[in-house]
Image 1 (cartoon, rainbow, N blue to C red):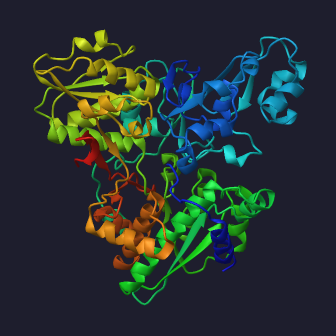
Image 2 (image 1 turned 60 degrees about the vertical axis):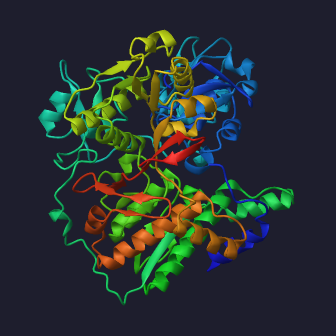
Image 3 (image 1 turned 45 degrees about the horizontal axis):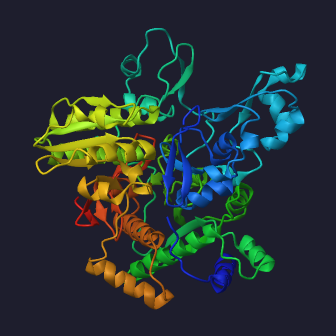
Length: 603
């Protein structure tokens, strides 16, 4: 009740609209000019955090967040393109030393007059942590020395992004790569798929390197990113029976950050409410509406909301001091470092825990109780590949890939599932420079060309669409298909999108013409005097689906979500279990296309 009371207190402070907008080893130096200014486009790779990226460009984390509003929702994700404001770059600081990132480590080259003290201040790290990661420092700092710095500062949990977590020791097999070994030979040797090896090793962006140690999942014949599995094993002694007379107790963990909001108001009475609090309140409202709907259907449900404050110590305290007896479902937290803590508690209690946002697939490994309600980018790429294979297999289809490591990985996944769908082999053409000359030889004049571009690089995609747009004429048509990251691009000319009929997959879609959606919006307006955001829609869908799953399955929720696909107000649920002792990922989605000057649903 304390958390609910304090959240209600924040409602009083909640002024204005609730509509919240939703790499590489060396910096990407390509620049994009937009109406809002000049930006460097940076492609996020595995292990990188906002903190680490800010050090590459000598800008602050808030400056990056300010021009990339989607970061407020879900943090950063592998393959995502970030805009770095050129005008904010501290050019003097940027010239002081060359900074590179690989995985979860920053590499700093020592220049003349630099000191250990200066490095600790620049990277917000203690001298002890520097020495721990750089034993040679005991002999002193030398010009040209390469210093290793953890990319996630220990004392700053706000810089730990949803998608990234420093690799930890786990139950996976450690294997040292030997000469002549390939991903295929390793998959045969250990009886697992190539996909599973790549997933637990951050995509193996640089390929297999002889002498390096990689992680190998224990043998699991069921894992294959979306392939069907035998569900008989889900009838397990670990199922906790659930009866119609039982009350479904749900624990929802959200970063309301009440104290921070009160502090903001005390400092400046006109200060807007903290963005994470806005999202949390929206999520609470949507989830409450789901609980009310379940009660109207005759279910006994009860939700309790916990304020994690986006702080690991507070989250640990809640888990330690709260009696969770009788709880049957956890939802949240939003940030990965806290989600992992609560997921361990869910595993201990043998109850499902649902992530309402994207989290790393590593969290699904060895924890069968974790459920991702949002598909990863690879899963959405698979969805798109199957869509194209089903609807365009007899068309003039050509596939291109960008030149980055993440583009190459995604292109491989796309090609695999496209070819499996059409029972044929379509090659992928890798394009390094997206010029008209490089595309022209593949475009057939006087025909309708269907072009797929696998790239998360906004500058690359923008240049590619510009080149293809220039090839259109009365007789030559081009339709372009992309991937999920395109929905976040803001610098692409609208004429390109419309005339090329750009099509890409998305995780969430709200059909405002649907009568059920109209009714939901009307109810929300009546209750809160404002339109619901997409956070409200997604939390409502999650509450409804999992509430019914636990009741209708009498507790055997694993088998239920494996066999019951469903479409909510804005989310499609189609869960796939990735392993015997691992969790579930939602691979449902939508395909949208630019047509008639709007973005339309085509699948």
